[in-house]
Length: 274
Ligand code: C5P
Image (cartoon, rainbow, N blue to C red; front, side, top):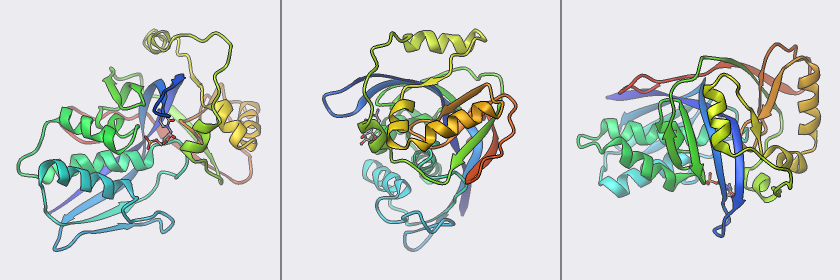
């Protein structure tokens, strides 16, 4: 018995940082959108556990979020079936596209499918937050407003389908490094609830409060954003803590050492995976 599931990437249509918390995390509010740039995960019942990945640069030990999700699901439910898992990687790493978090959420969903006594979706969402801040989002239908560390999930209605151009430079950035460079600006900012409404009133406000922090961590990113605006794109923002940009509008990317992907927003049907 085997189960092959897509594991999509995400972008943050807006990302507001509210304040730094006493536990070291940042309180945020963000509108997340799943996109059709996907990894594929294959789960097979086996005699012993194993994890393999098409990308040899990705660790397949206990630090891999797939293994963390398996461990957590077993701990919570007692499900003990050994599994052979393979990750076919397409989502770039250290890109702010949530690839690892998506793999973890897909794993929770898969194990729950394979388990004869599944738990309800709300439980999975709660457990997702224990693995990482972005994991819960990937258990939504594809569009969600997330608050807290990012783990509090408010599913939102589907937005009109859009095509994005994703631009990923060869270098990546670590999420903790970018957060460590964040300092709040004194400029007045729209509350995130207003930004959220703007997307449903056809006047979308795109922004990312982590951009300046990412530019401090890697100044070449600011130059890349300017090049993309000069290339003709109307909207150019970093996704999450970067280093991938998502762009809207028409632009001609003629920039060395970047990978360009076309991706569309993605929604999953009720009671089905992506
Ligand atoms: O939760 P996750 O493991 O994905 O977070 C990785 C790191 O990113 C955290 O250890 C923290 O440094 C930073 N982070 C943060 N505030 C958030 C989410 C992540 O400071 N809301």
